[in-house]
Length: 140
Image 1 (spheres, rainbow, N blue to C red):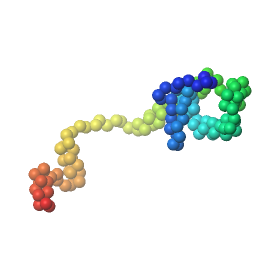
Image 2 (cartoon, rainbow, N blue to C red):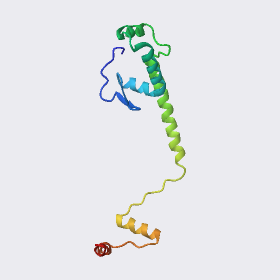
Image 3 (tube, helix red, strand yellow):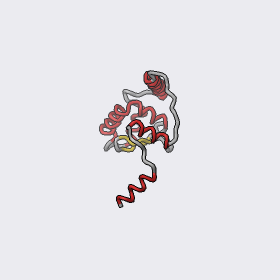
Image 4 (cartoon, rainbow, N blue to C red):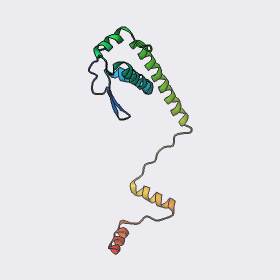
């Protein structure tokens, strides 16, 4: 929508200390496909066309004469879906590769049992609460 629409509470992003507000969730999603490139284009157009000019004239100019890299909503959505699918597939492959052996069951035990096991591994003996209290009294 060329005139901008109320995007809602989740259509903003703080990136490198700057706030960016989008016209809708799909605008934000498409912008974040290649944030660095899109920011470069935005700064270039701001500096070369918008800064110090009549905003209404520039708006009408861009409605008639599209930028060279213009993509329709359908093209952007197809590109977004393809990148999302590739990202999901890569994540699935990474997760599958990380599962290199059988999953070991996690045992559950009480805090006292865990403390006792920890001390057995170290070769020390856990102190009882009474011995801790008597040591604290001696240091006072």
